[in-house]
Image 1 (cartoon, rainbow, N blue to C red):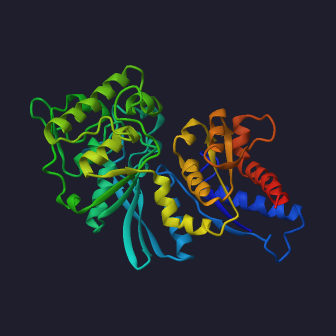
Image 2 (cartoon, rainbow, N blue to C red):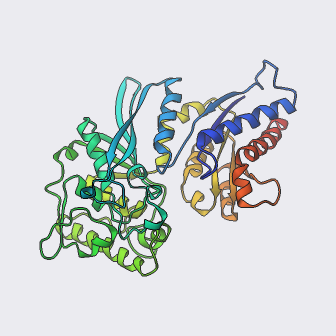
Image 3 (spheres, helix red, strand yellow):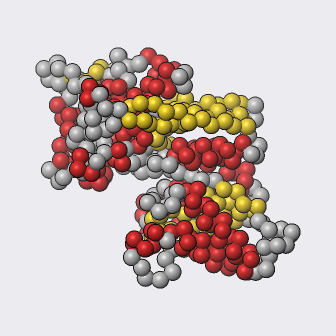
Length: 410
């Protein structure tokens, strides 16, 4: 039996790698329960671990793990971590405060073709977790640090970028990132706004993109996101996500109007239309910023990671796939990690079992997408704190029971 473990993180409980280890233990216990653990036949499993992520936090780690997995199979690959100094989202460049941000550079060789990519998470430079709770407010935060991280990679000679969107502390439409890369934002009096924040967007009167780093024209940018929100409006970046980043109700219309303002300037001056594009509202409008300022495209992050790991090749000989994440809900069904994996397993006829720390009724739609089984981790009523502290144990036992049923049916 060949089993693929492709787990996303269980937020605040398990990393994707830790979840996979717990699931592997559960599989081996299920085999032992049936007296198969010591037999040298096809029931002794070949277990392939593919830590995954959808473009948000954990994408760099998942991508490096995927590269390692691919290196062990048909693809010669190399992954390297790179550290650079950047401005945190709640500070300004002239404050003199810097933090370390990490990204990865991968070099993959497949079918005689070599591809080198800088893999980044904007959360590493502009993430909510970098801001003290008392200072969280997207009116005052900026993606400038993400721009500095990109500039660092440009200096290294990187020209192909995969940028994970998610976990941001910002709602600046990528304006801070663009400023760090040379764009100039000015107000109605011609004064330069050197590091635009969410609260600055309404007073921007002009955007000069002619001063952007010339090396960007040699680059290819793909932004990984798992949401389809437009830039503005009731489903836009400010209305949906800004409250999670510290915005109060009175801030929302200001932030939304600011994003609408820069979208109007980009359309009027450059013919760039981003306001209604699905995904433009990802990460406080960073999806739109990548398109407008970097001429980038948006794509599901999970597909990039799974392609790097060679999932399709593994599925060709797989009997079973296990996947899951901390919360299975309507967002999962709309295209997050689990959904992306199920698209592939269904296309290849491989049964997939899905596990979640919390399973809401909307997640039952995953059956329509190809899930063979959906399992919540809790085995009895318990507090959220207890379930999170016991996540590894609970996942192991739920996998044990689910795989036991799968084996019984073989």
